[in-house]
Structure formats: structure tokens, C-alpha cells
Image (cartoon, rainbow over all chains, first blue to last red; front, side, top):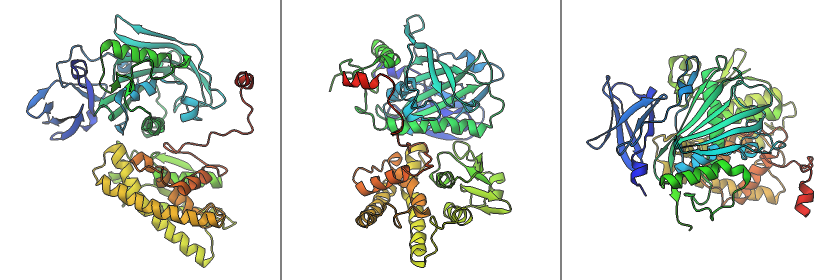
Length: 280
Length: 224
């Protein structure tokens, strides 16, 4: 169900680097066919002959099928000098766009899905952490997240207790702030920008803004692709395909606090595209 | 020894997996196949005019085909001859399976590239082709089981198993489900159980630690 809320948000549809003069990119956004073109000077987005709003930020092209009710979220840290900006391309996944975001917020799966990289099977504990729905910003935040990681980033050597913050600034975007191995006191930024193709399929555009001058660019991209492709096979097998918003549908545990807050927030925002609102 | 590698490529994974099983040290050079299409650029085409991965460099030798690389590594590093047997009958069968592995790349591998990166191909035809191959593999592995053999050529794994493994195990990535292929699934399990097995994204490691005790208190909680 595409309601006004889903229609009026901003979504990523291309990498800025794809915008070669004369290009014409065909994309599907919420079951509708749209085109992105570049005339050598400017970039335009269309649905048929209708011109869509467009902006280029965080190395990606953003558009909306409706009239965006609010500006695109800010990631101030992502625009700091000295960071490597890494756009990783898109990965198509047969899952609800909301499930892709929710999975990104989950820590408990690290030891089992990202074994030896983001988690270790003998360190499965999720310590207590703080979650809040920030009413003023209208965002979900999880703070004070700590987790043991054998190889937290491409630039990390050996296991560390990694500190995390999670932020959901829009229903189909998740931002991870993570201990930066190369620069103490700073956070590395890892984001998942999700383009809803339908309620049960999406294109995921991972993007990173890191302090890391050492690691070759290709290794950074492939580290992120490795992590996401480990998730993809799990995401495609989640049942039901739509994200259930009825609390009676699944039994959460303490480790799922962020997921519960995310679902509650989606419900409050009435963002139902990709969600199951009635218990099947 | 240097491997030009793309982490999501099943053909590159054949080499990484085999090198891990044999304990062969090597360094990797990450090639940005996606999104960078680095394999189409002049610098890479000088290395491999075919524009494909993997590429292996060992001294002056450059090899550009995964089956050729597996054959080379087996002959060079496996003195037992287990992985690439000399026996005429077995060797002929092995070459047949290496060709079968290329058919898997063209079908299951292509369906996967379509599903993940939207590579413009006839995905339905690729999936159908993959199922036709999987049915043949299933029958063969059933026959092998009657002979108490877990692998394609017998009781021990060979490079035929390594060559065929990735695009069978990764088939679900491309929408080719393995539910109907019980013997194929047991074969996948047998390979994942090998000492030194290396996973790749989409092929998960086994999660059994029989030697490791359960976390303290868990037994008591389970019994309570």
C-alpha cells in the first residue's frame, strides 16, 4: 500500500558516479518506472513526462514520487574533511525494504552470520544498551551499544570491543556510527540507503564515510559487500516477507530493543509500505 | 603467488577455497568488478585480455581460467595426487566435471548476477538451465552414495568438487532453490565439513563446536 507518507519521502536511485553525460538510467521505485538522465550539465528525474524532485547528496541521487514533506536528513559527520567516501553500488534483495533496515539494526546475528568478522560464536552476548525515539528529530537512536568483534573494520587488527550507535533518520535509511580504529574519538559512518522497488523487493546502496587512509579503495568496497552479501541470503528467507508491525506476531527479546523501537516508530509515522499491519 | 580476486565471484572463490584446503599461501589483489567494472579497463586487459577473473600469477606464469588454476595448484602443491588423480579413467571424468562447472557458471552463476546486480540476461532460461544441471548432479551423487562415496569421483574430494561447489551452493542467491536436491545438499555439507574449509558470502560455515562447552549456566537454565 503506497500511502502519502511513503510517497512523499526521499529515496536513493543511483550513485552520483553513474551520471555520465547523455546517460539514461531506468529504475523502479515503489513499483513505478522512473528515469534518471544527465544532459551533461544537469541531472533530471522523470516518471513518464512528469518531472520529479531531485538532489545529489552523500554520493547518491535522491528523488521522490510525491512532494517531499521534509528535507533529506543530515549526516554532518559524513561531510567532514579527511574522510574516505565509499559508495559500494547496489545489491538487489528479495525482501521488504523495511526488513533490510531492521536487519542492519540487529546486533545479535553478528556471531552467526558474520562469523569471524563482526562477531564470534563464543562471544554472543548483547550487553544492555539505550534506545529512544527522539520525538523532536523524529528519529530512532540506539546508544551505548558494545559488542566484541574479531575484525570490526578493514583497518582493524585483532578483536576489539567495538562501540556503536545506530540512527534511523528515515524509514528506509539506517546509519551506523562505529568505533574508528584509525582515529580515536571519531566515529566511522556506515549507512544503508534502501530504495524500495516493491513491498517485498529492494535495492540496497551501502555507503561509508571513514577515516582510513591506508586500506585500498577496492578492499573497502569488498569488505562492505562481503558483510552485506552474508546478510542477503538470510534476508531472502525471512518469513513473513512483510515486516510485521503487530506486536503479537513475533516474540522479541531484550537484544531486539532497537527493532521494537523501529517498528513502533514506523507505526507511529504510518509508514506501512513493506509492512504487515494486520496479523495474518 | 598473487590472486586477482573479487570477493563475490564464485570462480575466484574456487581458488581461495582450494588454497585454504591445501594451506597454500598467496596474496590477493582486490579487483573492483562491481561497481567499478575494473576488468574492462586497459590496465586489467593487459593482464588478461579476456577481461575475466580470477587471474593467478606465480612467478612468470599467468593463468586466467579457474579450472586451469585449480589443475595447476593441485599438480604443484598436492604430492599425494588425491586432488587431481592421474588414473586415465578418473582424470577423464574429472575433466568432464570441470566442463560441467563452466556450465554451472553460465546458468546458476548468470542467474545470480542477474538477481544481485541486475545483469541483463534471460534469467528464467538461466534458472531452468541450472535446474537441469542440478538434476544430473543429484542423480550422480545418489549413485555415489550407493557406493559409499561422498564426492564426485569417489571417497575423497578432488578439484572436480571444488570447481562445481560454488555455483551449486550459491544457486539460491540466484533464485534457484536447492530444496528438491537431497543428495546435493549432503554433498554441500560434506565439502563444508572438510578441514580448512573457507566460507564465502552466501555460503555459511558450519556452526558446530562439539569441543566447546556451552556457556556457563546455560545447561542449568535449560534443565530448569
